[in-house]
Image (cartoon, rainbow, N blue to C red; front, side):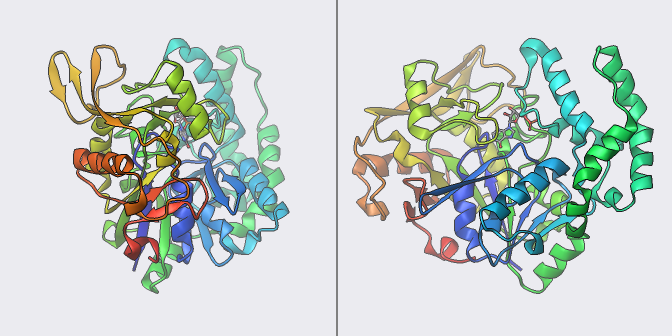
Length: 431
Ligand code: IMP
């Protein structure tokens, strides 16, 4: 009954796509449990780049089936467009993709509200991806949500839209925004309905039966634990639970069914959007790191903010994540540096803080305390064994392991599948 979870341990964009791609080789199923088309998983196989936003990246493996779980929010237009894009690249999707019937829809008014709220937040804006994610989750929790199941009957669907519509009409009108008609919304969604309908299943029964049969399932997390609505840098977070707890509610599987949790971290830190980032590099070095690492949002193209590895933030993710194996990504990006810094703890009002505090909404008054390591100043992409890494690179990895109290089983030294060092054959050569 192997259910392996892959989770980002920073603010997303850690390179989960590459790890998922490795493990998916041996998986029967890859399932998304949270988030929506705010995510962007970049996978590079033999130099060919694919970016997936909504469909689990396991779809790139012809023998893998994929489930979009109930914890995800799905924009019907984004789903259909991504299916078409994959099909145009010669990837068969329809007979291998399933969507849970209790998955909530991102409606056209959610996208509009997301933009409207951001525009009015002014200096406090979150920097959302503008995909309507938080608004769809908001309606889910407020019990105004519309689910995949509702696509089965147009009259009932229209009835629901009509019931919830007055709330939005008042809201939009009071902010001077254009009102819309129920018919317009229904027709906009219905344009995609016929293509989505055959994919809709009872995803909870499906995945539990598959697990009971001994099938191997990968639960693919989007974003990262530090963007978790409960445990991240609230309110600068996404609106779901990327942390492993989200797997149980987002797929409908019991906690005891999870066999492994693979955490993914980058050798430095990035975040996209607003919110506290204690180790952010504000000078030219930050710009260089962005260029070396290609740190531009896979979904929105926005430049990512770059900074040093933050052990304080990582300790919180590891505490919540119950990580059994850790993957260290993009070590090669640091190869040009003379010196590399690692934040070991913060000093806040004269006090030493070694785990990310939940009340941290700004970096004002927070001083990162750094340890400095010597750079290795040579390319790492040809290296395939840990012992062949330059001593300085090994020392950097050992230092991180000691500071966060976890072992890196997988070290990535380049974007391609081959540019990888395995320190735990057992996990990464097979589930
Ligand atoms: P939302 O998920 O669009 O509501 O955006 C909320 C916050 O999460 C913003 O700071 C986004 O930039 C961030 N975010 C959402 N998805 C991702 C992702 O896949 N990677 C990195 N940041 C993300």
